[in-house]
Image (cartoon, rainbow, N blue to C red; front, side, top):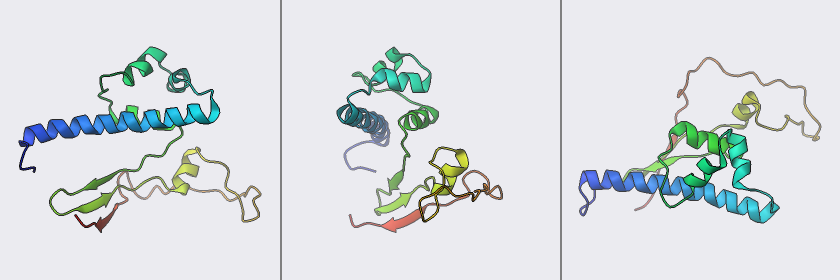
Amino acid sequence: MSDYLTREELRVYDRHMFRSTLVSLFWNVIIERKKRSGGFKLQNLADALGISKSTVSRWFSSSLPNWEADTVSDIACALNLDLRIMAIDRADGTVYHAPYRSEKAVIMWGNAPPVTSSSGSPSDKKVEPNTSSGYGAVSGTVSQVSA
């Protein structure tokens, strides 16, 4: 906990910064895609999400959206992004990395190009999902950083 903010003030600040970071991240991707292809518009994102352009425009206006986790995931998917999350313990600087989708998971869900052999040709190897572990069964990694 900070010496300057109450626990409640810190919680409110963290929420604001988290929402701001997500909006900035997605907005940076959209701007980069506009520069790269010249044809990417907010309407493209709205169409991919199945929502109105006015809703998407409102997200990137002056007030920060209070997105649910599913919405963040849907936006990342519509922009063809994998999100990776980490947390840093404020007390001792320990960094926690959330597990992210492996290439196998991407192939399992059908969001990746076909598996190719070392020669570059498509492989007939079928990737079977691992159903022995439930959601959240994979643990993240922990590393120390200097403060």
